[in-house]
Length: 153
Image (cartoon, helix red, strand yellow):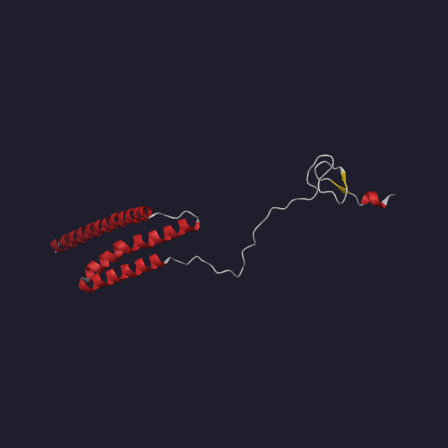
C-alpha cells in the first residue's frame, strides 16, 4: 500500500487530487483552501454596558423640566402636581422611545420626538379625563347613597 496515496489532499468541490502547494483545483478551479469570512473582534465580556446612558441634551431637558415643575409647585402646589402628572410620563416615554430607536440605528428627528411627546401627552390627557369622570361618577353615587340613607331615617 502506498503511504503517499493516503495523505494526498482532495478538492472539497469535485474530489480531484490536489498537490499540496496548489492554491486552486486543477480540475474545477475552486479554491483549494476554505476561505474564511473576515469577522471583527468579538465583544469583550468586560465591556461597559451602555443601556443607561442619555445624551447631554436629554439630561439638560430633564433638569429644566424639574426646575419648572419645582417652580410651579412652589407658586401653586396643586397646579404643580397636576402639571407633573401631565408632563412627566410623556417626557419619560419620549426619552425611552428615542433611546430604543437610537439603539436600533434609527435616530429620531426633532419633529418625530415632538410627535411622540404629543401623542403620549394626548393619551395622558384622555386617561386623566377618564379618571376625573370615574371620580365624578363615584362622588355622585356616594352622595346619592348618603342622601337616600339619610332620608329613610
